[in-house]
Length: 213
Image 1 (cartoon, rainbow, N blue to C red):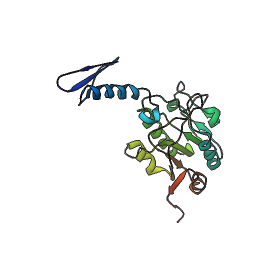
Image 2: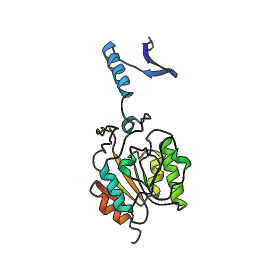
Image 3: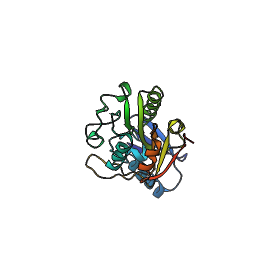
Image 4: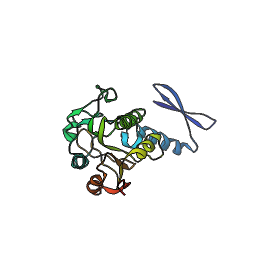
């Protein structure tokens, strides 16, 4: 990757895919800072920039909580062998399996890939399978991206939402904690939303509609 400065005030960033143009205003010192920031962005994990690095794992506390609510985790459609050492799903699908093409049923844990279009694909499938009663219960861990269509669709159909206090410290392949720049929510689909509220309140405020009222 390289950069070239033009008289018109633009900086051109050259990548393998061709020329990418980014606006630059400032002196040579500001240009050097801009280059450093742009290069640094390539190293950031998916939970901060959604750049396609999807190998980040959910801390065990959230998995244990999901099990307390749902009783079991039958399917994790967006996983890996290493991730399932924590999740312990009866059936899990890796990137090679492409869980979008597989059967999901029973109780589902979903921490989807955060890159587009994968996150939208997985969230839309979860809704479809839930409406079709293939999925009976689900816990979905995603960024609190309330401005996105996929988040709005999930929030409109779920039974409860846990607004996690702070940010989830996802784990890398070596077990080191990440430092996401965005917060996360867990959305629950199913009938036992009161149980979800009791269990997940340890992580933050839980909102739900009292369907029995």
